Length: 221
Image (cartoon, rainbow, N blue to C red; front, top):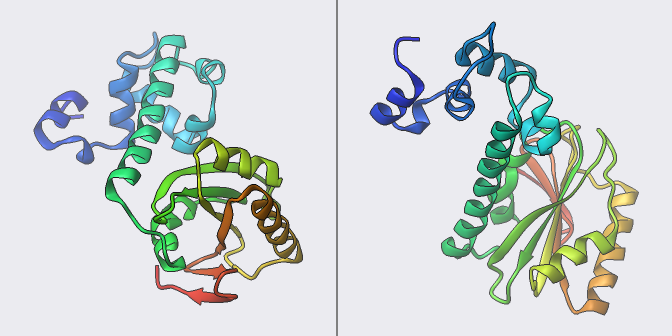
């Protein structure tokens, strides 16, 4: 490595560093048999950023070369990223008044997903997103979802309405009978609580299905 990560960051900016290099800056030091660069590369070859994100402090601490202090630092970095995203949503004042806008906002989250993930976008009275929260992570073809989990999040965020989103890892956004059933349950639960279900969107590969539109929409990217 011709330049150290810190020097490279100062000279070219953080966007020009690899994940290995960024992780090396956080880890700071290696082990007896590996320097910090070898260690960070070994970690990123074994774990994705998503893997590291969902690990707790104890799990991160079990990875060779990451002690408790570094594990705490990583969790703090990830949490700052989440809070930055929430703050940016409020400041950008995006108005989610169409399924296309929702797709453009969240599609990148699902590009590499191999399991069904359920997200809930909490909206204010002007259809601006207050927060985007992961409600559940399921299996390759089944998500674990209950209306109480969705509305617990919506109530916490003082949402006026919500948009429910989940992906089909198969790439086909055609809704299943279960998708129809859960949409009806959430819509009825929302009516009782005074929180409207604005839409339920299923993300596929360069396509989505909107329950609001009642049809599938093909998108190029």
